[in-house]
Each structure stands twice: as C-alpha cells, then as structure tokens.
Length: 94
Ligand SMILES: [Zn+2]
Image (cartoon, rainbow, N blue to C red; front, side, top):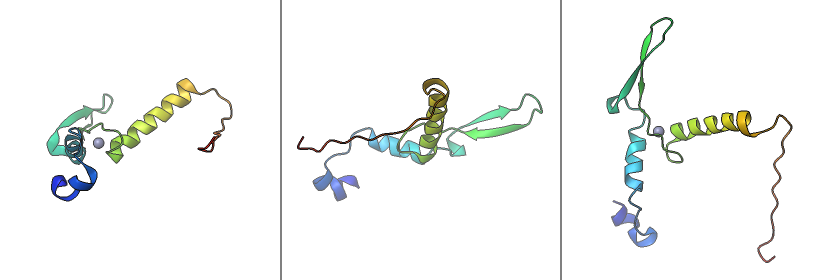
C-alpha cells in the first residue's frame, strides 16, 4: 500500500515502521496476552492486557512513559524551588 501511494514522493519506509504500527494496533488487546493480578489483601483478581511499550506512536504507552518521567524528574532531578522555562533564540543569519 505504501509503495503504491507514497513511494515516489516519500521514499521507502524504514524496516522498523511496519512492525511498530502493528504492535501499536495490538496494544491492550486481551487476545494478545494478559497478566493475572491478585490483590494480596482482599485476594480480588483481575486481568491486565499487555501493552506495546512504544513511545511516540502509541498514545496510551507514550502517556504512561511521560507521567513516569515527570514523576522521576520531580523526585530525583528537580530541586524544591520555583522553576521557569526560558527560550532563547538566535536569528539564523547570526
Ligand atoms: Zn501501547
């Protein structure tokens, strides 16, 4: 399909693109594999579907990684002071 529609204008896809797309499409589907989790206190059980763990392509997995990174940055990286973001740009000619 890509070759028919986009090869002339966008060139070949890298070999990793197609498997990543299919992994993302299978992310969170129960028929692709699950883990059974049991609460040690009440012994209630439930199933969690496996995720693709791809960043950038899968919105669900990407969001989870972003939240984990933000939590790590807040605990491990940043001091407990007010932070500001300053963007400094230089004109291309300079
Ligand atoms: Zn995913």
